Image (cartoon, rainbow, N blue to C red):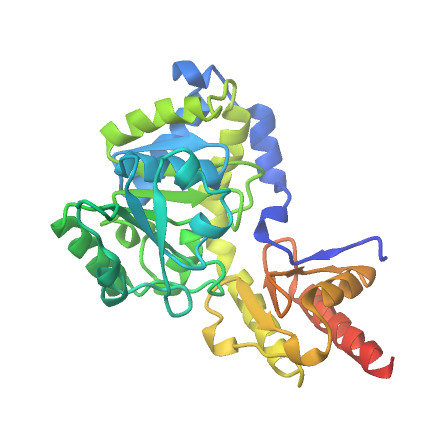
Length: 350
C-alpha cells in the first residue's frame, strides 16, 4: 500500500488547517458548563448570526445536534417524518427512538428530496390507533441522495404547511454551507423557516470536532440541559471552538473547489463502461456511483483500491460513495480514477 493515501471516504477525515491549529493553541478558555468559556460563547453567537436564529449551542457531534433538535420539537410516542435514506434514520443508532421516544415514519424522496405532496399522506393526527406526527425532518444537502440540494421554494413550502398544522421542522444541515454555494443564498435564508437547524463544523468546513444546533433562544436553553444529559457538557472547550470559528469564517469560501472536483470524479466514473454515475446530479461534494455491472462487489473494489492507496467506502453491494474535501486535490482525484480503472482491468484479466 502506498504511504500517502487519497482519502475519499468522507469529508470528516480532514485535518485541521494551520490557522485552526494556531487558533486552538492561543484560545482563551473557561468552563463552558458554567457558560464561562469566551471562545465557545463567541462561536455560539456567530453561529446564531450566520443561521439567522436567536441562539446556538456547540455540541460535540452532528448526531447529538440532531438528537437534541428532534427532542425539542416532539413528545414521546409521536412520529417524525424523515426521508427513507436520511442520516437520521439510517446512521444515528436510532437515537430518535432511544432518546426522544419517537418512531421515524420514512418517506421516499427523489434523490433524497421530499415534497409536501409526498409528506402529506403520511401525516397522522392523534387518534385511538396511530401515533401522531410530531415534527418533520429534512436533510440539506442529502448525503445518500448524492449531496443533493433542496430547492428553496420546496423547502419553504414544507415548513409553511407544517407550521399551519402546528408541526415543527428540524433541518439536518450537516452540509448546509455546501448547499449555500450551489444556491447562492445565505445560510440564514436557507434555514429561516426551520424551527431548529444543525450544521457540522467537522465535515466540509474542516474543523477537528463539533457541530452547532441553532433555533429560538428558549428551545436552545432547554437544549443545553439535554446536551448535559447526553454527556456533552464540555469544560475548557474553547480550544475546539477556536477551530470552529476559523471553519465558519474561512472555509465556506473554498467549498466550490470540492464541488468542481466531485464533478470531475463523476464525469470520470461515468466514462468507465461498467460504472454508472450521474454527473448531471452531482451538485456538491458527494458522488454516489453504481458498480454492479463490473462483476465485483463494492467491498471488493474498495479493498483493491485500498491496496493502491485510494480509500472509498461502499454503501451496499452495488453502490459506492466518494466525498471530496480540501485534503484531496484535483490531481489526486484523477489518480483515484486511474486506480479504479486498473482495478477493473486487473479483474477482467483474471
